[in-house]
Structures are given as C-alpha cells and as structure tokens.
View 1 (cartoon, rainbow, N blue to C red):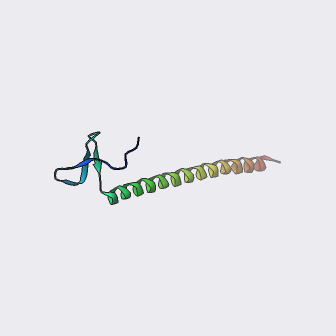
View 2 (view 1 turned 90 degrees about the vertical axis):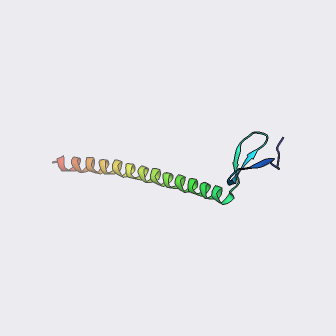
View 3 (view 1 turned 120 degrees about the vertical axis):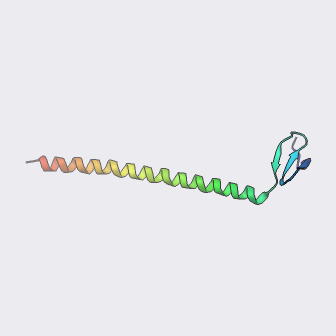
Length: 79
C-alpha cells in the first residue's frame, strides 16, 4: 500500500526538515536542494564515465604503438 500524503511534523528550528510520524524518518523538504544534489550526482557520474572512456582510448593507443614499434623493429632487422 502506497501513501501519497505524508503525515509529517516540522522539525524545530529547521524549516527545510520534517519528521514522518509513522517511520520517525527526517525528510528534507527543500526541493531545489534535492534537485541540485541530483544534478551534482549526474554530473559526477558523467565525468567518471568520460575519464573511463579516455582511459580506454589511451590504452588502445598504447597497444597500437606497441604493435607499430614491433613492426618497425622487424623491418629494421630484415636484411
């Protein structure tokens, strides 16, 4: 059973916080702060993904350079 209306009471001296009377949980009611936190989380994940992709590309380039070096050494050693 899902409740759509929360029974809450305000937390003293904290206008952005309320306490759920059923679970006793503290709920942050500041929607803009929540949205900013979600955006920061998404931005951080995007940055981590970009770093992972750049690392993959660098590793692929290293492998290709090793292959090129190996071929050049073979060519230099052929009479």
